[in-house]
Length: 318
Ligand SMILES: Cc1cc2nc3c(=O)[nH]c(=O)nc-3n(C[C@H](O)[C@H](O)[C@H](O)COP(=O)(O)O)c2cc1C
Image (cartoon, rainbow, N blue to C red; front, side, top):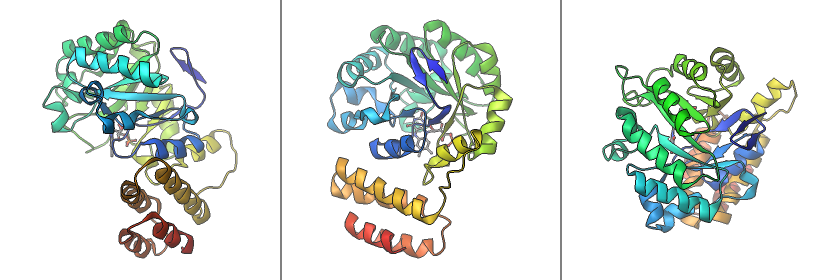
């Protein structure tokens, strides 16, 4: 167990924020399988202060998900700090996380996300403004190692962020221009951990217990954040915990997968419109069913469904 600010973290396994994926239903499922910390998808600071309904809906969470972080992105210190205060006043998450890692041009061309890695003064202004606006809860940061391989800044930025009062840093071991290509470089996670006293959360290419263990042993990071390894595989958290504690909680069988899919779909219907739930069910089920016998046939059938009951019927028949 360790702490981020005053927040107790029971499990060193974090679900990575993922746009279009880590909504309330998926976070609940991952939490039930042992994720120690979950985050919302990244939300736009502009959207929050304009009180855009879709943006505000992305922030809603239940107590079952705690501890939870709301992740924000923006380029203007005033707007992003106002949005942070709005989030604190209206939603009371356990922490607010600032995104300095998004490589998508739509975000970076305006100076948000990983664009801040190109100019640490911007990062300093944004971070200081958010910490000043919300002194009540920890402010954390998730970033990449630098804009490109010629400009690695993670350790320098980490030292600066700690001085400003950031309470934890999640580091994805890739540059922004790398997108998802190549391998995440864990050397920078290790270097950051040696340079700062706040918790460091390692991220990048952890798909199973062996990866988790290697990352922790090598970098000495306080926790490991898992993104793509949890797609269609929320029990990755439980499986790793079982290995740590030598428990035997067999999950990867078809019955658990079907049960989890149905639980996931029910959470979607409870929280979203039918059309949106159908679309998201199809997306998640294509991940959940990967690798099972005849899965391509079932996935195809599911793709033609127009309502969730038909999807559930197909699932039950598998
Ligand atoms: C579909 C998708 C959406 C993502 N959205 C976000 C996001 O909203 N905020 C963020 O900080 N990172 C986002 N990421 C990056 C992940 O949080 C994580 O850093 C990255 O996938 C590397 O970890 P992994 O190798 O465990 O997947 C996203 C990644 C994926 C695949």
